[in-house]
Image 1 (cartoon, helix red, strand yellow):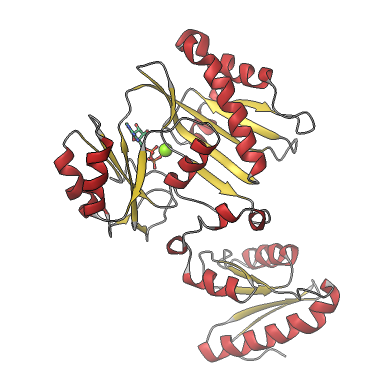
Image 2: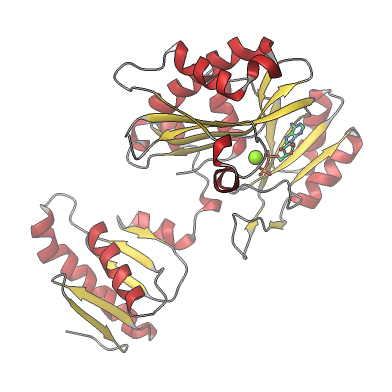
Length: 344
Ligand code: ADP
Ligand code: MG
């Protein structure tokens, strides 16, 4: 589950990671009121959608005029933003973050995630802040710094110092080395305590006042850990979810909305992936929707025989009624691509 930048920043503040003063805004009136309270030289109005690349797409507006803030809010709320991360349909803006402008001296990249190779929480850092990290990794992989943390030991000062020195903070701005090491420790705590899958700050800035500020924030949570955190659950924004996904969740179905025009109903992630591969092998549009359904209080095998069969039966009927072709993949080896008729 992803959260908005303003929510990520609330978590940052809670864990001692410095962020600009700011507030979530959903109307031009609220923008005017908060702008007066903010009392700053530069106002930054940022569209809150679950996608990056907003800056280049016109979703981040900067103004020195307090009086201009309401107009910007009016323009952005309700607008559909298309960024390189939203897909061509874009995402509608329902809320904004209005925050104080920062005096940027240098933009860095910093994140923490689990490295699949080692299975350890790992910091990723780069001097190329503000850029797409995937692009940096592809074009200039030597600019990507990695520091793994042994989860049995936890974060240690040397982990932070390794990253700080690899970034060259000692020549860039020695005054921020200690706060930087402390910040990494705080991010590690946030990552572990909240069962995050990714915590990303892009850009993390060094200000002209020689301080560190998280200017952007992204936090993704491991869906399997969310039930432990009421505060995280309350951050869910249904506007950002596909209505079909909301309906599926309400019916205890694991449903993943993807592009493509072939639906798959499967009772296991492995089977789903295999089916997807087979469809692709057949030269058809592979990305498709996956519905995983199995009994909650039964063994998977038993559930497969009962719950799944019933659910699939109903599903087949629904697909047939809607005139949608379907792919059947059963007993792992038999594949049947049917016309919209009941295949059994
Ligand atoms: P996105 O990653 O979606 O484009 P960011 O939050 O990273 O959005 O903002 C894009 C750029 O806008 C940043 O790299 C930074 O240069 C500028 N920016 C964002 N917030 C502020 C702020 N509070 N003060 C000054 N500049 C900002
Ligand atoms: Mg960013």
